[in-house]
Length: 428
Image (cartoon, rainbow, N blue to C red; front, side, top):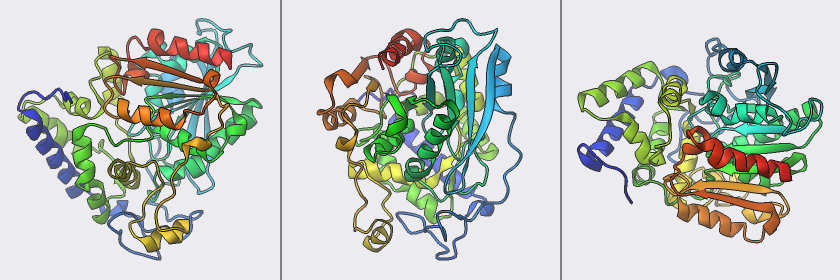
């Protein structure tokens, strides 16, 4: 696999990543640890559960939220935008934006008239937030869908800057499947009284596939588009595989690091100074993990580094590394047969059975030949699980030159991805 290793090779870059990781551990603040009345420490392969899934122990009150996304990034371009907050069954407060055209919008009609606009829900991936759908301004999917007459809803996953109400960190992406996904779908459906189109990228596809396999929200779903679909991840970049097999995230949990945040000032400054001192291009470190994303323009990249990365739970990172090592698409492994039985009634975590996804659910899968996170081998395994899907309800789009983040941020994504996607919506 060509990892585009330059200026000292892969060993130097892996060493840099290890140094950064150890700095994050050293920079851990005591007030990030969430206490539990049942256990006061983390097991090697998972965190102890909260006293109750519906009354988790909160972290200290977060600082006031930043200026809302509507005000900072949408209304300034002449679009209508509303902020909403959805509380999940386990107590997390999820921020959403609703975007539509106004006098400043360029066109309308593709999704119907003002009253009957079809709702589209945009769900971002890991370590970013909903801004990923707006970074390229009028070339961004969020604005393009609004211009095409759709009723656009953007989700900001729990733990990111706009969704830190009732903040706690004892969750993995299983909780996104179990709590966030149903709550968000129910809210948008109740607001619009229409079934939704769904667009997910990266972890947004992981959550969707798992939820659909359990029948969650499919009665409120019109169609689903999965960009850079991530279910099986055994063939991701070699650096990420080494990290997973080194149990780095498990070590972080043992040390009490419950929030995985690369943007804390001390960490960010350390990474920047390290790259300068060693004459490394830190962007290349990201490329080696996600793939060589080369279809970005400078303004999009500037906005990306201004807003991202965002935080997630360390437990989510552990969950993903478990799937890397085990080669499965399964629920969180609590590290012992006893704890798995306590949570699941069985010794091993249950598998998300993708063959249970309704065969007549219209699906659009877009994937790239340069993607190190949604690797071709893993995507083909996913497609094999969907082989019994109705042919007319399964659309695939392969772009050989695309890597992981080209789908939401690529400079030519409108022509390559979004126009075919909107045509797909029009058929469903």
